[in-house]
Image (cartoon, rainbow, N blue to C red; front, side, top):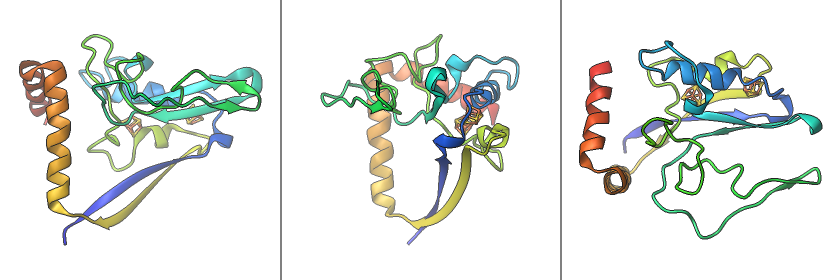
Length: 174
Ligand code: SF4
Ligand code: SF4
């Protein structure tokens, strides 16, 4: 059975000081041209900040979802109630997080493809972000199915032409 590398970033919330260096480097790395600008709104990691209670929670951009989910979550931490979906990783129609500001296209953490280690991990001087890798066996059919479902959802929301334009920009960079 083929194997794939599972990449994980472990977040130690107790060590995060809310400096937002991770947002700065992530948006700079993904700027076009690379490192030409830095705008946290384009970052694939956002830090939920509560300076008065000294609490900072880095959240990574996860999967795109075309529809809002019917079940929402709401957290209360140290007596403070957070907004609905505050810690959700999805790029979703119900909120502005994890969307490219100009095009509205969803943003997803790609683990800094091409780099030996995620840059947010390298730039986190407090070691709140810890990078880990492991090998796992995969079922090829399931992998293919997941990819097709994701592509279908993106195409129905943004249209084939826009997706093609993004793919062509990406292939030019390679
Ligand atoms: S760089 Fe590290 S300490 Fe700074 S906000 Fe990001 S996770 Fe927190
Ligand atoms: S791993 Fe790379 S793409 Fe993902 S949040 Fe960190 S800097 Fe951004």
